[in-house]
Image (cartoon, rainbow, N blue to C red; front, side, top):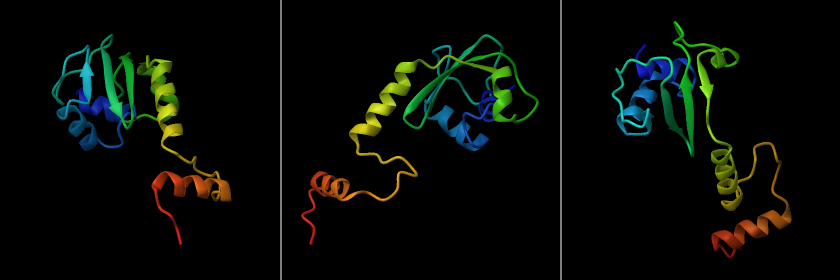
Length: 123
């Protein structure tokens, strides 16, 4: 199976076009080498793909016939992403003043901190 198709099928990228673009821009490596989108993926290879702020690492187990549901991905790819990657992303989110979805409206204290960070004096 083609690399871009495999990345799409195991849900690392939303579309094959996005997967192809990521491969061509150097965000994906196979066994440490920058591949082409048409490269054939074989079981046992290690694929590292940057998705957003995190670099996910997977070992290829197999190739699905088409895109599979999230619970079935484990049958085709083994997640080798180190926990340090998730911690790094969590620290970046905390430093940037990221507010989790569903946290509600900012409190008065939060609003004052936002104004302080942005440098806006407010009216």
